[in-house]
Every structure is written in C-alpha cells, then in structure tokens.
Image (cartoon, rainbow, N blue to C red; front, top):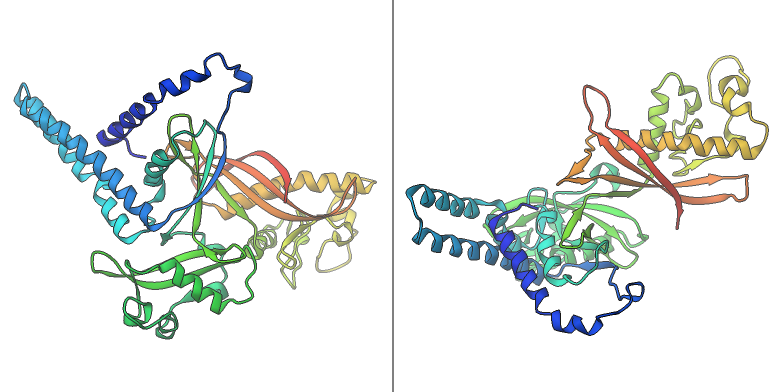
Length: 416
C-alpha cells in the first residue's frame, strides 16, 4: 500500500487508540507468558455496501487531515523554499491515486484491475480488526470487475448478457431490464447470482462462471465489465483474497491459490505431446492423457496407475522398459509409485511455469507463493485411491530472454 502523509496520520490515530487501553491491560501484570491470551485467528469477511463507503471516508479523512496540518505549516513557513516544499506535499496528496479514486470506489462499490483491492481493503481491516495478533489471516471477499483467471474458464461457462437476460432480472425502475444494463445503484452481485441460478440450475460447489455485462457508473459512463464468480454450494460469490496481520497492520497476501481444472490437465498433455523427448508418453489419437507424469484431462487428474504406463507410440512395437527404463528398472509397486511421486514435483513445477508465465517473485515487497492443488489417483504402498495434494512453489525469478519464470519447490501435502 502506498506510504503517504495520510497513512502516517492513520497510524498515529491507531497508536493513540491502543494507548488508551493501558489501564485495562494492567490487570494482567504477572500473567505467565505461556498462558497469555492470544487472538491468532483465521477470519473470513464479506464486504457489504457500507464498507466501500467506509473505505472512502477513511482515505479521504486521512488525506484531508494531512492537508490541514500542511496548510497550518504553510502559514508559518520560515522561507520561500520551505513554502514551496510544503505546497508540493499538498499537491502530491491531492493527486495521489488512492485519494482521487476513493470516492469512485465508494460510489460504485467495487474494485477492478486498476483500483486494486489490495491498496484499499487494509484501510478497513486496520479499522475493524486492530486487536488481531501477528500471523492472523483474513480471507476477504468483495466485488471486483475486469479481473480473474479467465484462461481456466471454458467458453461454455462464459456468458454475455443480452436484452432478454436483463429483462429476466426485472424491468422496473432501477432494475437491469429498464435500460438493459447494470448501474451503481443496483445490487449487481445479487442480480448475477439470480441469473446464474437460472442458467446453471445443476451447479455444484466449486463451479466457476464468467459474466460480461454493461455497467453505468457514477461518472455517467457506460462500460463493459465482467465478473468471475464461484459457486459455494448455495450462491455465486465474489473473488476472495487473503490478508495477513504482521503485528502492526494488515497487509495484502499475494499468494496464488488454485485447484486444477480439466483445462489445466490438458495444458500438461499438450506440453508432453509437443516435447519430442517425452512425446511418446502421450496418447497421439485422443490427446487427453500422458503417462510420464500422469496428467490426464480425460479424468481431470494425475494417475499413477501402473497398468496404464505402457507408452503410446506409433510404428513397430517397443518394450515399455525401453521407453521408460528408469521406471521399469524398479521391481516393486511401492518403488515405482515412489518414483512417480518424485517425478510429479517436476511436473507440477513445469505446470506452474506454463500456467503462470507472467509470475513475479514479489508483489508490493512481499514474496509470492503458488499453492497448486491437483487430484491424484495412485495404488501401492500403505494406501491408495483418490487424493487431493497441494504443491507449494515460490517464484524466485520472472521470465527472461525466452526462459519461463523460475519456481522453487517448497512443500506438498495431502489436503481435503
């Protein structure tokens, strides 16, 4: 988040508020550190309309308070140089994008790819959750337009609203069908939830859809927008992002979290088909599965099934051991499955490179981690069956000179 004069004023206000609690805290003098009450917690919060207005008020008040202080300093400036410097600070605050755009956010009640939530949501969290302990996390859900992982959404899950669609959601005053658009005085997410429930009556939790529509904003301009919405089993909800409490303030957490979809598994099949040294492991006719790593869009999973690991190839028959000597040099099922687990680390790293070609090591000075969940079918060892596994990678270098971004393997684990 940008550091400006008014962010300093906000910090001072919070310090004063915390200082007023000293007498209350004196009751706990001598409390053994091992039994001290803490508030490390994982919160989930959905912003309501009033929160966008609150953010506007916080940003504008902090800025206006800073400007008032500087104007008072201007009256007693000791020199022309001091006066010029103070006026420059005032101009800088007035032109700061956080200040200029805050009213637009409050009026329209959404964020977008330009007015990013990570620059504004911390204002709200630092107001409402100031007593959280270090390492607490906040999963914040809010309205966001023109942003989302659209590459993972198939064409059949993308909707562009028509006149009939707007009419379906109501044709009365301040309803979508009145002018065949959405507006800043409408509960847009509520209407889109209704629309998707009508269009997708058999949706299951985790389904993702994209809806494009026209929006008439507070500047009296009509713009095309889209929203990426996820079904939680009950309703279609907005994007969620995580924030971490670092002991003094809430900061945006740029960690990328995703669960592989059918199209993601196909990315890996296509890569194997296009890579000569391992292309023999992909089915040349159906082109929906490969058995070097085991990615398959056919079943939307990674398969370690040994009976499937006879490579697909053309021409004269070749013994599987010739195609994959590393695997067939092993004698037990457990050893072979262990090799496949080991290989998959490399496969998931390659997937991260292909799926996120624009990955960067840091956002706002914070290291970026990728938590990628894949469904795995395996047999052998002490268990077997279908399991979801989360692979964690850290981006340590961006793409450069034709080379993909560099990822460092951190960990993997079974998840529900």
